[in-house]
Image (cartoon, rainbow, N blue to C red; front, side, top):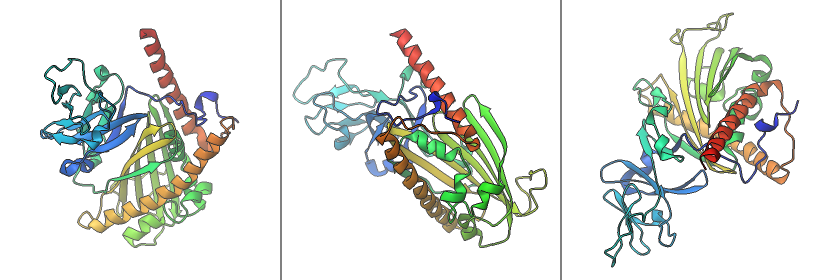
Length: 367
């Protein structure tokens, strides 16, 4: 069957984004040593830096005088100075100094964006600042839990973020795209099926078991054990594009006929995966992620091995998704057709489209 029109992404250059929500703008380590980061977010140029007070600042990356990049400027205290004509802006974006001019127009400045730093992530609000409530930031406690260890990562995709969401909504691709990395074998697509798909008002939840299977390569590398395992994945996708996944491996037979097992079953080894997709434009995406484990915490090589395995697997996805983007751009009228495995992604597309429509309708009503 064909995907519903409101669920299809046709790679339009005018793709609307959900504005009134929190997006990840960067990792905290990107701003060390006074570094400034220039990053386009939702089509808007943004400069990120950490001021003398320690807070992360996000401003429009264009001096209001002649449009020079503030990211080519200089941090002074909590302010940034444009190094074209020397205008200085505070952390809110207000112009506080113009060399050679005493009078500063009170409304002169650049746009400042609300930011919140939490668990090493820098979150940004691109919509109406009056609606920026930090309570709406999704919590991923494993990033701050000493019982888990990971290695944060970043990738850039030349593709629309929804194509990446589609990819993660479908576990069946693990068998074919990641046979030698994250999946393990093509058997995964034929023998494992979702035991539960929950369509939620902010995304979806999918649980999937693969019983009595060989451990996938990324896991085998760090545990050095070829024994058969039962594997459970529980994925949770949130609007507009945040993905959390719990993965557990237990010795084969521990999953039981009812496909349940205690998280701390004998021999259990677990992972927690967080992925954040921030649109750069309608055809490009910032991808922030971490893959954490709960065992061998005193061995930093486990995190490093998992990091490299994930990068290898993500690059396998990236090659397919970026080529898919080019295909859709070449023929925006190309109709994508759904199969049973697409149930979660179709629901997500509908949910997101309805939220974007509601947001845009509210803006029109105010206007």
